[in-house]
Every structure is written in C-alpha cells, then in structure tokens.
Length: 238
View 1 (cartoon, one colour):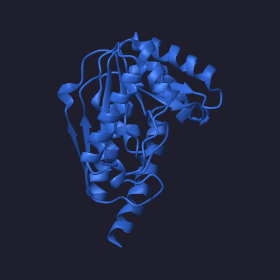
View 2 (cartoon, one colour):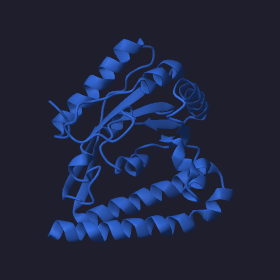
View 3 (cartoon, helix red, strand yellow):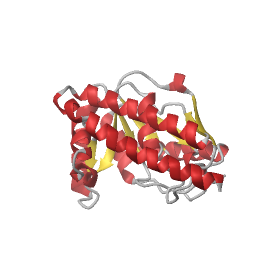
View 4 (cartoon, helix red, strand yellow):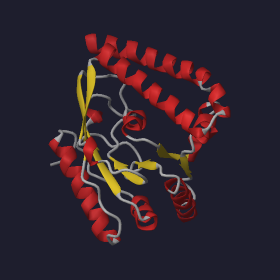
C-alpha cells in the first residue's frame, strides 16, 4: 500500500514538473541549443530528486572514468523511461535518437527540435536509416554524444535481447567510439507499470568499443558486453 501511495504521489509530481518545465523552457527556444540541453539536465536532476525523496529510489553511476572525451555513440540498455532523462547527466553535449512522432507534440516537440535531437521515422526503414545516420554524423562533428537505445524500445528485465541493425550501421559510418551502458532501471520503474519500487538503480558504463571493427564483430561485442553486465546487475538474462 505504501508503494502504491508513493507511486501515485510521484506520478502526480512528475507530470506537474513536466508542465512546469514546459513553461520555463519557452524563452530557451530563442537561445543557443546548449541552453536547452542544460535545462534538460536540470529537469533530469529534478526527476532524480523526486524519485529519491518520494519513492526511495537512488542511483549509482559506475565507470564514469571510462567515458572518452569528444564525439561518441552511447549504446544503452533500455528498460524504463528513467534512462530517457537520467543519461543526460553523464555527458557534456548529449542528444538522443528519438522516434519522429515525439517531434509533433506541441511545445515538447519544439524543445526537442531546439536541443537538436535526432528523429527517426521507423516506418520509412532504409531511407530513414540513411537520413538518421547523416544527421548523427553532423551532430558528431559538433563534438556531441549520441545516445541510442539499440533495441529500439523498452525491454522488460530478463527479456531476450533484440538488437536492431541501426546501431551497427551508425557505428560503421561514424568512425567514433561506441560506449556500451548497462543498467537495471526496469526493476524499479517498470515499462508498463505506474508503481515505483524503492532501491538503487545501477548504471554501469563499460569499456568503449573503438571504431573500425567489422559489423559482425561489433554487434557481437556490444551485445555480449551490455547483456553480461545487465545480468550482473540483476536486470537481464544470465
């Protein structure tokens, strides 16, 4: 019962926070994109504070010293909505690859556009992949860190991995390191549940994969590294 009450309170405050930041962000549309990214990090801090204070959910980031400087592809496990904001705090110039439909949401979509996220049209397939890759390369040339969820959608803890071809194509074309990230957020913030369970979300930043591997070797290493670490954190298959 306590978990349910805490979860209800958190969800109310979480969505009120979104409304608050939607208003606060309006003037940021006229500022450089870095200002919008900075506001996004403040919003992320607010969410982490609410989780800790209301739900008793903390976070432990491990391996931050493994983050190389400069442009980077960040390939993260995706179990929850949590990582769609929390990973912003790990990087200097982060942006996400997001589904194009999010760009159509009033206000929110404008802010995503201003923050220069990379939209992808999942229905266009090959054409979308080439457009997305070209946009990723453009952002990498500006020194940014591109956060991608290689499975494309949230996967429940313990679900079999389902890595998509997109991450392999981007890696081969970009010529920058790929940083694997494992986590267990789905144990505390389920993908289809309003309940928030107390505990500590663990995020493990793994050794970067250098550019230049062939596609088969890359995806094999990426899958092995992320899934092995995720299982160790209790959020994946062993």
